[in-house]
Length: 173
Image (cartoon, rainbow, N blue to C red; front, side, top):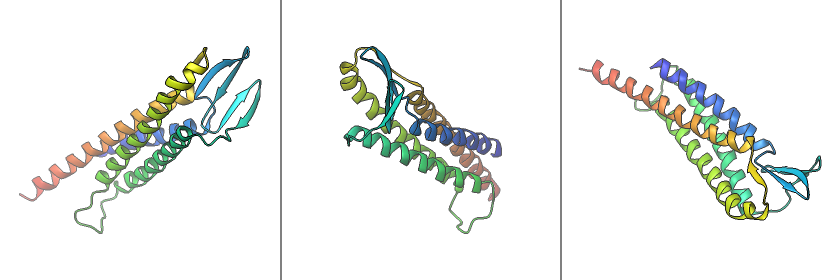
């Protein structure tokens, strides 16, 4: 049980770091504009060595930003619940912290999936046609890796919960 929780906690901490880095950096997309390379993130775009704030309030950027922030927050809440699940004290008889941590990681996975799906769909269908020579960059890829790490953290914590429940039920016989 503790090995599953330890593995889940490791995956969750890595996922939260990746989510924060992915959300904060400016390399979601790289493209060539007027002969020079440019790149953009969720908050800024950079051309010719100068970076500018994204001042346009475009719905897909706002949705992607919001879901990435919500994903980071729910992953952090899952990490707190995951750390607390190592302690056996609980004021509630039926409350399992490992189950709560697993659910928070799955919620975080859902949020990052929504963010990545929105950004991917709009980029491929709109921006990809606008810029001829473009590609997704490392910040975008970190978002997908964070999705996988969150998912595996949720799986690990659900396995730990099932092991704990099986031991609890077997102990009452």
